[in-house]
Length: 323
Image 1: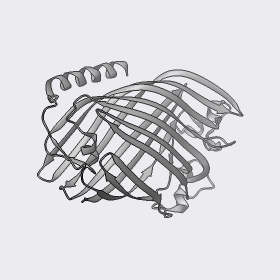
Image 2: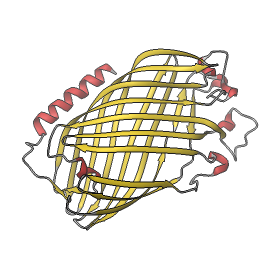
Image 3: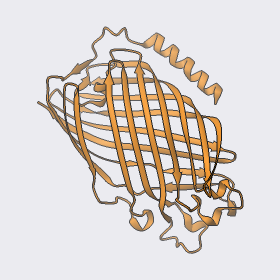
């Protein structure tokens, strides 16, 4: 992992030195004097998996939450953006197989010159263990999954992106109050501070059919606090009225990780890789836009033989008018 990290940093520096723009090129159009009315429709999800040497030869347990549509409406003018969102009380996946979860998402975003800041709190309650019928005789192949309504995942994150080129505008990447007019690219550094983890109240996270006598396999909670820096590269372009963009970064974090069993916590220090990934693309004119946007937040930790990986992501269609 260390070699991969150093190679990526070297490539990022070389690409940014040879390809970065001078900052004098205007490759975006701002609509600060426009009132922007927009709406969005999409969904959030936060599946995770845990790997270890479990009973019955199982090495990986997958957890997935049901998906509820999320609708938002908002307005933007100059530096001001207000969005109100709510979850539609409808499950997209089969409730018999994936349950009826509850979750809460809160976020704050701000652009300050060459930096972009993002604070987020996410809490998902209610998961299903996929294909549990393979090790639980009480579950039929028709039902497939084991519902675990008290299983909960939580993430609190504070992130700051520093964009190396002034001409790459995050507002244009987001597409509401600006859009790109040509090719834009930049290296960037992302500073990240996180708390994340999963728990199951007083029960084990892993189904009891798979646990053994070790404390970590009977853990009722696992998680970490981590701090790190992610170097990366951002690219965007526009062809006629169509634009697209991507952020891609790879770095590492220092972690204080733990597992909890019977109110006794054991903690460890370590390192973990971290991926930064964003996509945006669609159609934009000065008076109208419709974009598909997505954001992926990949978390991971390792304690002894146990590996925990989780991806918080959202996918949305955003459309609006600029008056």
